Length: 152
Image 1 (cartoon, one colour):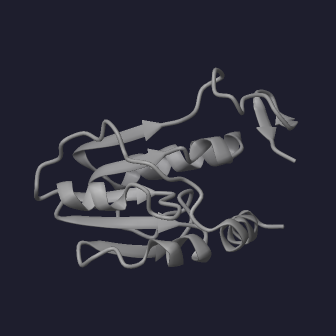
Image 2: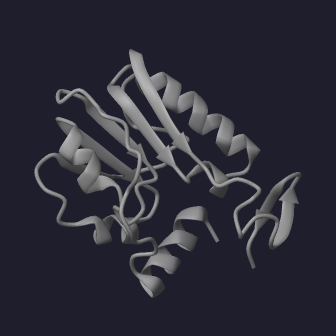
């Protein structure tokens, strides 16, 4: 099963997966053009749209993007892969990748990092978050590569 198909299945059966508020988002210049890689069902979209001129929200799951609607005129939803972005180089003032790389194998993590660097403007910022080993889900499931586990 492909990564996209797996996420579509999860979102179709469970709907919005993550609730709650968004904490500690950085301030952005009001004219910022922002990319959110792996936007999921849109938990951070309203907060990003309140801080930026435009937000491009990308996810591999069409089901996740359906849950993001309605987002308002400042948000464009794009079906795509964060490891192979459909945008020109130096397109964004900021790229957000929150809790995305943990769903990828090492090769995908490298591709995501290269793509984020490519689409950022020269003075742009990458904002990154990931769960650590102290997270309650750490080291559970099948180890598919060193330090990387897939839940069953």
